[in-house]
Image (cartoon, rainbow, N blue to C red; front, top):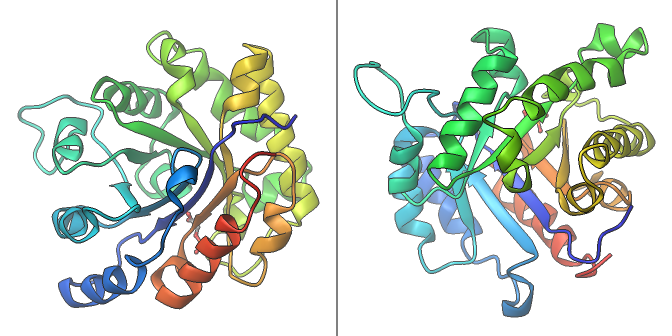
Length: 264
Ligand code: PGA
């Protein structure tokens, strides 16, 4: 189900890592990556630093072709919610994207589908594009329940009345939980099958939506395995954790995406 104008992405999730010094060094390393002018609508490189490093990132990446986003966002708009960061605040430091429903948020911070739906609504209202993360656990995978689990994470959120009108600004990251940070990557065929399944869920809503929605893969992506992942027709990019903290390796992953044909 290739779409002539589907965007491609490399996204780097830095998680709870880095100091002023190491983030400065990493940004200095990657800010020279160039996306040709005529490809900037279609190809995107995005980093997700910790909140305290966002202002520095915005400053250092201004006037480059790299973009940045938040790793999380509050479901609330503003006010007495100590410790929360609102979508408007992310917008204020020029975030274009936000990760929502990452498995670490679901697992350690009890994020449910209804909280995730509220976070998506808060983000799109502020003009930020949510990257909704879904994926099965090892037990689900072994029990051959991957599609069932992915459906259970997607269907209630997509059908939520606050989210439904904004589906065209959403993107999806499929990240098998057992592949995150483990060095075990899903086989390209497994990832392709699940991406195709996710696209079919969108096709039930609208064919054009299914054709245009970017679906990216995450889980132990490295410079070594990225080519096989990009070779899959329904995979539009990657969400990279560990390898995105290594400047040279992240650059190599970005170059693999930049070498992809613009359309197709
Ligand atoms: P990983 O993390 O690349 O270190 O497996 C991916 C993610 O959690 O987004």
